[in-house]
Image (cartoon, rainbow, N blue to C red; front, side):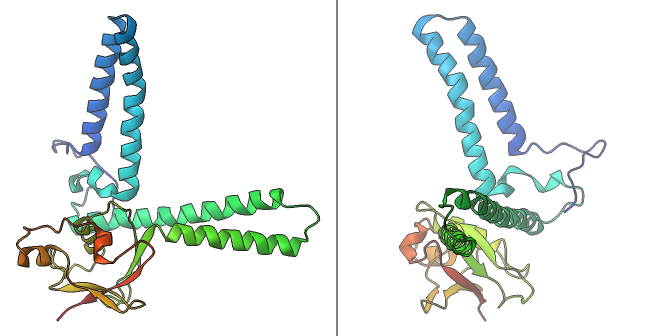
Amino acid sequence: MSQPVHAPGAPKALNPLWIISLFLTVSEASAGTAATQTQGWLQAVLVLFSVIFPVGVASAFFAILVQRPYVLYAPKDYSKNPSVRDFVNALNTSRNRSVENMEASIRSAMEEVIPKMLDAKISALNKDAIVTEAIESAREDFRQRFIEISYSQMDQDMEPAQIPVGEDTGVQEFLNEAWSFTPEWIPPYTYGDKWVLVDQEKGRSYRKMGAHWARRHGKGESDDRLLYSTGISAGDVLQAVPLN
């Protein structure tokens, strides 16, 4: 994807990054000014707010950056005016690389730290075995925080996607994320009609969810249930299967 540019005379996209920055600046300036004009407990509250508030916003910002980075940018930020699909896919690809880099960093750290914690009398071979076992355990724990989706039945050249999920992840949020990795010929909000997720290991097809299911059951345009209520959970490996 091309880098953000600002062509002469082109209107600047007011994306969430600018809004967050402006909001933080105004809030901190207001709280700081008010703190210098007050005394006692009120001043202490304002000072505390000036410290805690930016930390809270930063925590939320980085959580969004990991989970859904594409909501922080606008397609107009880029020179070639990519489609929304291309835009989301590019940022999701970057996130998948971050996941791989994080796993590599964990491996590197464990390989360095664990041998130092082991008794010097243990042979080098045993140390390597212990390190390998610990790394595999950490990798498995890491995988249990994601759902892997293979799109090979839609396009053999597509790489699997890893989508982070938690106890509060909603069905529609998850399906929107899963759709962002699908080929361009899959229209939005067609889960259960044009494509479906299948767990081959469990022998289950998760067709009864998504916008199509919600409309049929009079629940509007969005499936607001929690993901775990459908039987899908972190650590699952799913196949995205097109429907005729």
